[in-house]
Image (cartoon, rainbow, N blue to C red; front, side, top):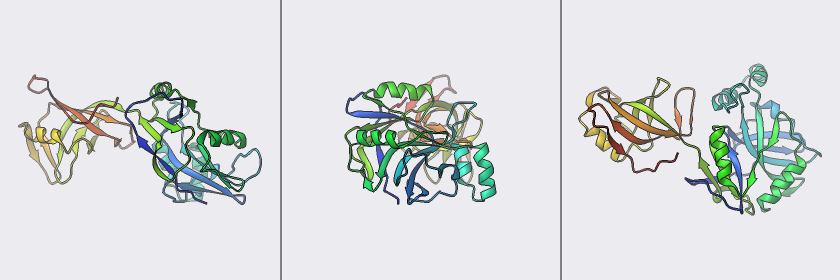
Length: 298
């Protein structure tokens, strides 16, 4: 049984509100567990089945036997760094052969952070208030090394956001405590992202579709698309720093830096949620800045 998931709208700033519950956002994969007729199945948010990839999650720790549908995030938490590592999770997701999956279960053990219960013991719970569903989840789920309920606090979104910043999490989820579970994007669920800011050397721009080519702090070239198709591109193209080009890129002279914001960085240096915020021209000593129309979201 797969139920169409509820999705989050976006907001720039954290807030306090007694009518909301606030949860951390972790760098994982949205997964729905269907445990019906004593058979566990796992689905992504798009309804693709991933039961074979995550066999350690098929033993559902319920306090009493029942049919249940749970919604949450599957993630890998690195014990050494204390950080969630999405790349390791993707490595697990891409495995297809059972011997390799069994080995990976030991090297990269996953955990299911459950934040909602949609169905229980023959009853569709989606029309029930969130606070009621949260209480029921605590009553029926027995946390262990593979399953736990997502922590949350009531009313204090700014406090939860500070925790997310300290732990280098993706941000926070803000959910109306009296809200129902509705398929698709809803204003009752809001995400506030924890953006990181980085300075990167500008190398040029992509010719055939928008993208700023930069040299990241990790020493790897990467293309950032968001924030680049507006005034910043026009200003850089007119800056007189053009140096040459090839089939894919136009290159500029050294001395231009870009301020980038992003949510997380992948192993291949790709920025998730990456956006160009500002260009700083320092080669002439003028320190001239060119700022995009998008706001800082630090």
